[in-house]
Image: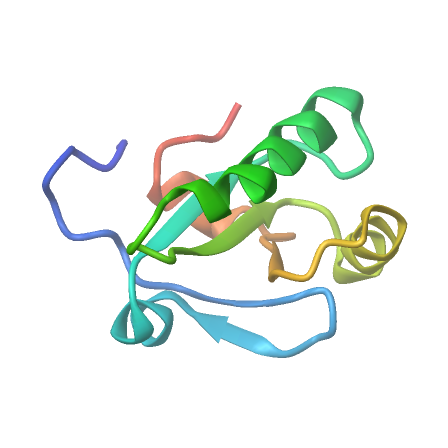
Length: 107
């Protein structure tokens, strides 16, 4: 079931590329969050999408959202992707595909 506009985002905790747990509700206490789902690290489309989001963060004057990227890749692959692309935000590993099902974005 997909999350509905205006509904509370389902909470989750996932490991990031550095094996640190990241919990959505904790991130939301700090400020707004952009939650992006990508099917795979290193694909041209996903890389372009995430680079575009990263580059646009500065144009959201006064909002300063935190970008969280969810992928079904292992944190090993996400660490390599973050290193290759110089990503400085959390890349979250939903290796067991729990969160993508919660959000209705499983393909």
